[in-house]
Length: 400
Image: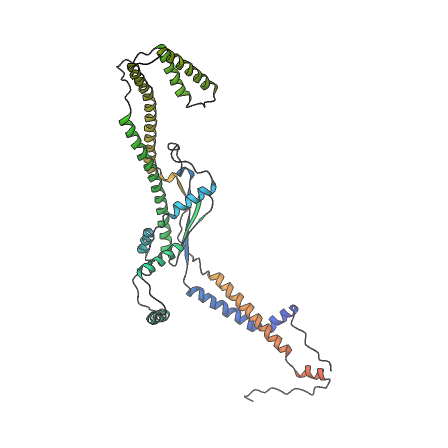
């Protein structure tokens, strides 16, 4: 006896399946969409505010202090240096200040009495767990540390380029989210300015100490009214050559032809002076010592004058920073009040619910159709056995 099997459900029969089970599919789609819509209203909201801050390269450099504060050149070094300075703001003291100002920490916030059934159930369940030792309440320090970590996790800092950063904050209250983001922006800018001021003042104090030491130990130059000591012609020319060498070495290297010519002339004059001097007496050695002091005194005065000028430049830079603080930063996007929550999105939740209801009901309809086709029916059984079908019994309702 040959047994014929029903053909399996294929993709061409999906329109027939949709038409046959349209009531189930439509009801499931609408019910799931409504449930997800209600869930989007009941679920806790998450709001997010952000701002975009640019830290210019001249924050690390100035034309007045270029010899002391080297400019960053590598892109990776610039990005990591700026991000490190921004993250230095997130100190425990500043986090605790924000939490106390806006009541973010749950441990420090006053515990209100539960009002809803869900809150009362959760409070009772937690009390039972703590009483039975299943979960511990924890110490104040551990809870405070956990609150700080949670607050830090709400702050996002990522770079858009080597100089531009996006700083965002997310929270369940839109007003708190907006004001915390504003405080973050103000604190970051203030902290960056303080770091720059500290660097400049540290360099200024070091130069000032060096200038004071040189002023105390530097030999005095002859006064204008005192006639300079008369030197022999060879020594006078040697002194002029050395003065010229001191000036030229600041512009050219030792390999320059003019420098080499002056060095040769210096050696020649030095030999003439040594040959004419012979064996120096005690008095001549004292005079030579005085000449060395006279020759070294202008060099020390030059160094002293250079450091004094740079000290003056640093004072100008420090005063200028106090009045032109906005020259080092630019806020490309200011914080905006978050009107719509970041999560959950009502439209997205409705779409997800309707999609879940549609495909779920379609899957149930396909399973139902499969079992209906695989079951034995009177017509299929008569055809399979090769016997005639006399008829089928009518179905009467219980009322009749």
